[in-house]
Image 1 (cartoon, rainbow, N blue to C red):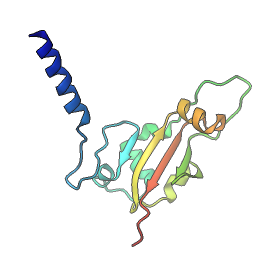
Image 2: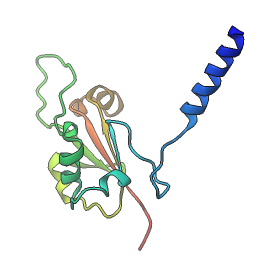
Image 3: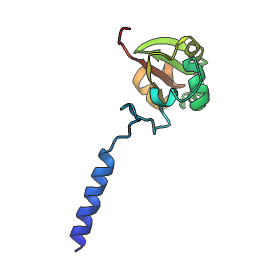
Image 4: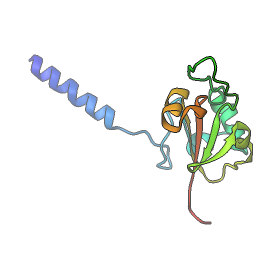
Length: 134
């Protein structure tokens, strides 16, 4: 009897774990505090990526630095990448229109420092766009 319960519990965990949420348009819906998908952004009345982030995930812009030695001075703040190309600081988000944005992802300071180096210790915002031509 207990084996059957364990088996049923494992099966239900697999079924729930494999289920991916989608919007009515077949696009993924964001349940992560570190990711914004186009479907979630479309529900707002904003024009730029900066406005979307400020309204939906303002914590992306805080960029608390990862711990570093006292002698390190870095005031660059959160860095922004657009389709894997670094644009600059968070003010560059104002220049990115929303019409082709598919996802905005925040990489926390610890992961950003490991992935990109110590100059990115405040975190990184990665903006991904569709590459479809009109």
